[in-house]
Image (cartoon, rainbow, N blue to C red; front, side, top):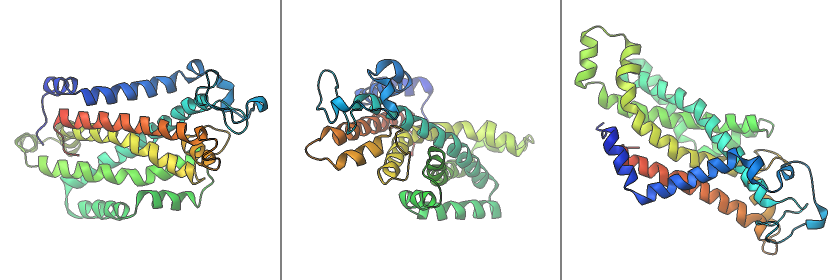
Amino acid sequence: MSARPRSAALESFRSNPISLFGLALVAFCVLAAIFAPWVTPYPTHVGPIGDFAAINAAPSAKHWFGTDTIGRDIFTRVIFGYRLSLTMAVLVLAISVPIGVVLGLVAGYVGGWVEYVIMRLTDVFLAIPPLVLAMSIMGFLPPTLTNAMLAVTAMWWPWYTRLVYNVVRAEAREGYVLAAEVVGASVPHILFREILPNCVPPVLTKITLDIGFVVLMVASLSFLGLGVQPPTPDLGSMVADGAKYMPDAWWLTIFPALSIMVLVLGFNLLGDGLREAFDAEV
């Protein structure tokens, strides 16, 4: 893999307005999620509370995104939904990325029966549509936040195994690896000190892209009733609940759906910018 120097990558990223726009969207969503209790007008509306005097109120200066069927402020619940979605994405990738990277390193460098077992297992998982696999797992588990996270994690690590495996296969015969072998470096040293740094750019790019995909997957599970349960604010379940009242109370669905689009678009644009900056194949 030929990656650009860091200074050139940074300059390339700065000169790309689309990437900067994606970074701005991501920064807005992340900061809003972090400071949700302070930037939302009705932070108590994330729980089992209602304002029956404001049921299904249309968007206004008091309620920017309107209210839901029991009078809760939708803008507040969307921002707290960002917090939940981003937390899920971070936890899923924090578990699946190390597993996938380690397996890809071992399979690509060690070879033999170890490579065969790891890559065939990876192929089995990749052959199953991700949403179908997640739904199958959730069908046997209670619909909780932890179980939703485990269901998505179970289907995400193979993509990193395949990515790192391809990079390691290309790097294993490079001069710096052969030199490390000649001087008697251990396999862990070669894997984690010599080869792994060259896997960082494509892995980092894929992580950025995958955050948006994980958010979509979690929202899809919640839309189908297999994710986080009420009254916890979740963007997918908000879209599903609001769809029953379309088109009269359109804001119940439109604003949560647009919020998902903004979050996913931001990470996709940011990931594309990093891919171009690092000149990495993902």
